[in-house]
Image: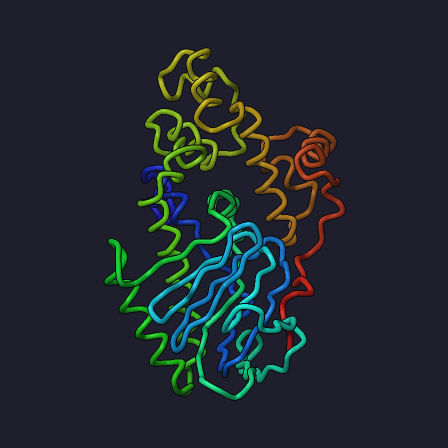
Length: 322
C-alpha cells in the first residue's frame, strides 16, 4: 500500500485535510511606515493571508467588517475578495500591484511603502488550492478568518510559527524567503484545520456530511473511485442503507443529491486534469463516461463551458509579477 493509498483509506475528513496542498503563487514581506495603506484587488480562486510581525494594522474586507491585526495574529481572506490594509482609518490605500517591489526569485518580493513615521512589517501571500477536495473545503470558509496566538487551543503552535516567521523577516538571510513561504503555508493549513475543529459552522454542510459515518463513507468512495459506474443503489449498498434512506440523508447532509455530487466531483477532477494538460478524449473513459459527447455535456452543465475551452492556468492581473 502506498502512502497515498494509506491516507485515502483514512476517515473522510482526514482525506479532505490531506488534499490541502497549496500552490504558492506570491509572497510579500512588507516593510511599512505610518501612515500606510494598500489595496489587494480581487483575485478569484485565491486565498490571501496576512501576518503582522511588527506594529499593527487594520484589515478591511467587504462584507466582513474591519479587523485589527497585531503581532501574533493571522488573518485569512479565503475567497479572493478584494480587501484593504491600513495603518489607521481613512489612509489612502493604493493598489498593491502598482507599488514598486524588490524581487527575490519569481514568487517572493519585498515591498517598502508608507509615510516615514512608525515602522511595521507584514508577511502576506496569495495562494491557491488545486485539488477539488481542497477547493470544496476552502469554499466553506468565512469571508475573513482571524486567529489570535494568545488564546485558544492553537495558541502554542501559532505563537511558535509566528516567532520563526518574524525572526526570518527581520533580516532576510540566504534562503530566508524559502523559510518564510514554507512556514506561511503551514500556518494557512493549520488555520483551516483549527477552524474545522472549533467553529460550529464547520459541523454542517459538506464537512458535516464527511463526519456522518455512512454518508462520509459514500463520499470517500466517490473520491477514491470516481470512474466506477456508481448508481444510487450501488452506493447505498456499499454503506448498508436502503436506497430511499440513503438518498434522503445524503441530500439532507451534503446539500445536493448523491448523483449530482458524483457528476460535480468528476467534472472538478476533469477541469484540474485539463489544466494539467490531459486531453479531452482520455478523460472521458478515465472518469466513467462511455463517450466524449456524454462527458462534454456533463462538463458544460457543471462549468458552463465545454472542456475544449479550458486552457493552462495563468495568473490573474491582481498578482504582481517581476
